[in-house]
Image (cartoon, rainbow, N blue to C red; front, side, top):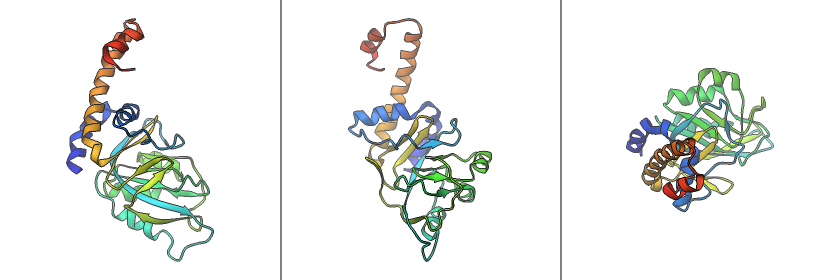
Length: 219
C-alpha cells in the first residue's frame, strides 16, 4: 500500500472526492462516503493517505487509564497515515486537539478525520495540519469519550473503514477506498477526471448537455 500511495500521491491534485465516489459507485460500493457533517476546518484542505482506524465511545465516568489507547494509536502512526476516528457521531466533547495533531505530524501522518468534534481549532489552522471533524467543542474527552480500540474496522453509518484503506477528503467530503479496490479505483478516477476536463470544455463552448453526455457518458 505504501508503494500505491507513492504512485498516486503526485496525482492527488487531479483527484477530488466526487469523482472517487462516482468510481466506487460503478464498482458496487455505494456507501463509501463519511457523513456530510464531517468537514475540513479549512475548506481548502485536502487529505490523501492510508487509514489508521480508531474507535471511541461515549462514557459517563473517567476510565482508569484515560487517553491510553488513543496515545498508543497516535504513537503507532506511520508516514502517509490518516488517523480515521469514529465516535459514533458523539458531540458531547472534543476527541481531538492541537497536541495530538502535533504528535501525529511528527510521525509523518498527513491528517486526521473524525465524525466527532475537535478543539484548539485556531492552533490547528495555524499549523496547517488537515483535520476534518463534525464541529468544535472546548470540552475535553476525559470522562466523556474513551478510545476502546485502534487498527480495527470502524463504521460511519453505512460506511465501513478498515485499517489500511485509502482515504481522500476535500471540501465536499471524505471517501474511503477499500484496499482491494484502491489500484482500480484510483486509475479509473484519474481517467474520469481527465474525461471531465474534456466535457467541461465542450459545455463551456455551448454544446448541448445531452449531446456531450451521449459522447462521453460523463455528467
